[in-house]
Amino acid sequence: MLSMPLWARDPATLVRGNGPEPSTLDPARCQEVACGNILRDLFEGLVTEAADGRLVPGLAESWSLADDGRTWTFVLREDARWSNGESIDAMQVRDSLRRAFAPETAAPLAALYDGIRNATAVQRGELPVEQLGVEATDSHTLVIHTTRSLPLPSLMALPLAFPVHLPSVEEHGSAFTRPGNLVSNGAYRLVEWMPQSSLTLEGSPHFRDAPAIGAVRFEVTEDAASELQRFAAGGLDVTEVVPPGSQDYWRARFGEQLRIAPYLGVFYLGFNLEREPFRDKHALREALSLAVDRDILVRHVSGLGETPAYSLVPPGVAGYDGPTPAWASMTQGERESLARQRYAEAGYSADKPLHVELRYNTSTPHRRLALAVAAMWRQVLGVRTELRNEEWKVFVGNRKQRVITQVFRGGWIADADDPLNFLAAFADDGALNWSGYHDANFSQLIEDARNADSLPIRSAKLAEAEARLLGDHAILPLYFYTSKHLVAPRVNGWRDNLLDHHLSRWLSLERADE
Image (cartoon, rainbow, N blue to C red):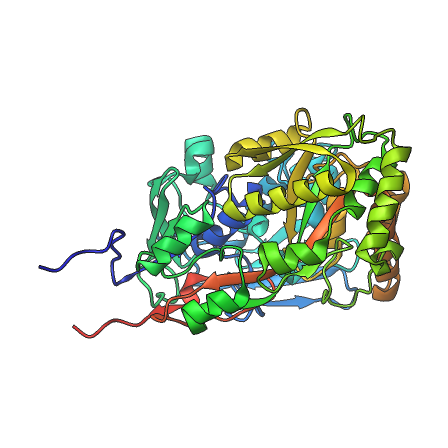
């Protein structure tokens, strides 16, 4: 008798681990990796990404920039169709962008697009959506007007800029993202969503190129150890992460199935700057940062090629030479000595230790890291840390509200190869300013960078802004990410890339001989 594995897998279905339950499938509201992975399969922007991360034509077959450097023209494919068979025209794309910037949508990443004419004023409700700098000059031509130099093609490849089927939105409201209601324009369509379990997609019959893989299932895999177990048992083709541990160990166990590559992302801890104990406590925040031995974290806690982070923007971002704080060149012993001095200046001691809560979303890697940081704070400073793990949506809500959260796990994965993508989040108008960081000079430098006439001036302004953020110790950078996955031998077409985006349409599956 043949026994079936614990997690049976359809040989014709690609099964992908995807981390936590996606917070939304509304492209305009997506702000995390879990929803982004799925949305890139369901939808397609004017521009899309090849397997190696290069920008290639998507819904638009071509685009051009006028001599004024401010007027972009996108020519849509004439055969573009929604998953229900209806055609897509430029007016629908225009109206989708208007919806994305409408105040009631509250798109968290809208600030990335503030170079589009009137985008900021529209999102703030100061101008009607009709004055957004986007126009449809005919049924297949979309013109976007910007007020400054902007990497618009890369922004058009992000979920916020994906078109949505507005009749479905109007009919179903927020439920337009549910199976049976969701009309998309990408290579796949949504057929099933089992909360806290999985989402299943199948190839769209109306997409111009039928994907080689007919069905994709995204599994909710919040626990890295369980995800690994499922992969080893044959229940997953791709993992979203690899558990912390020795790279040599995982390589010996899985060989070429282990994929580790450079990644534009940073892992940090954030402080709630609006409440005690960190409000107006620069010395305390500095002490906690200095007390963390980042070399130990990347060697013995994460252990998968990460590098220590003493700044926010990762190395390798195009055209950017960011600042490095002076204490980064100290020995760890020197840092700890200075940490104890700053701790005392903040009014704490062995007899009067800091009591603090550190919150993170449920995950084995996050717990390991939180335990390690708490142990370092205890050993160096005597800090008493209470760890609190929360389900993803609860964690995100608490972090955003800045009421009960004191220290929180933070991380940022670049949407585009641009330092502004990291730094703009901490400006006064940054929707992802979870710490509540407010510095008028920082925000002005971000604004100056946005309006700079040349890339060198822009880069210099951003570096100055980052130096202020780091000098204020508004965050505690820990390490720069690597992308890390296990990819089954039957999966073909997987290409490592800096943004770690892997659209299922570029993959194929080898079938075992029957």
